[in-house]
Image 1 (cartoon, helix red, strand yellow):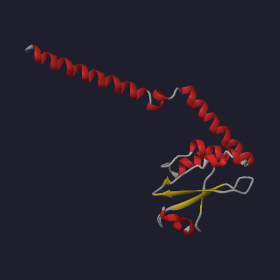
Image 2 (tube, rainbow, N blue to C red; image 1 turned 60 degrees about the vertical axis):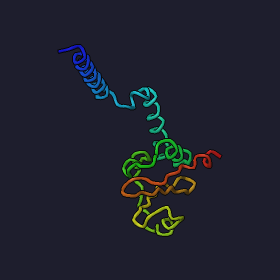
Image 3 (cartoon, one colour; image 1 turned 180 degrees about the vertical axis):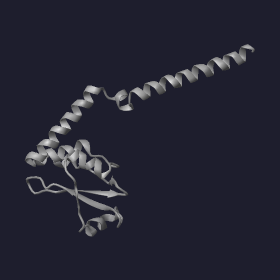
Image 4 (cartoon, rainbow, N blue to C red; image 1 turned 120 degrees about the vertical axis):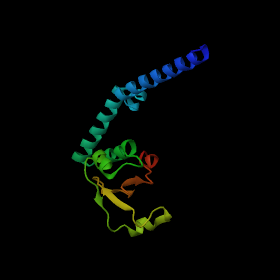
Length: 144
């Protein structure tokens, strides 16, 4: 084996070793662990749980709005949103007028409602093919 081929083999073995090392590390830690320390995630989950429990108990608008602002994201399944909210959303069957609004939605999209909060507000979210779409949390309006 000449020096050029030895270099290629060494580099290839190094590359394979590096890839295996990364795979082992990635297998032990999720990408979330890499970018967000465990303590920060635990604190975030604890805050979410606190707001969820308070909303279920008191129905305060601030708690459901905190959950929507901080934990609900486009692309989530309805089951994911139900878990975040702490209750199952109810299907809104009288949704044809809402779905016809601004051409953003299709006739086969489904609207689910959470709430009401103690002020009588219900929060409606639109799902397409089982996933949340066009979600805007209106956080600036809620902070006023």
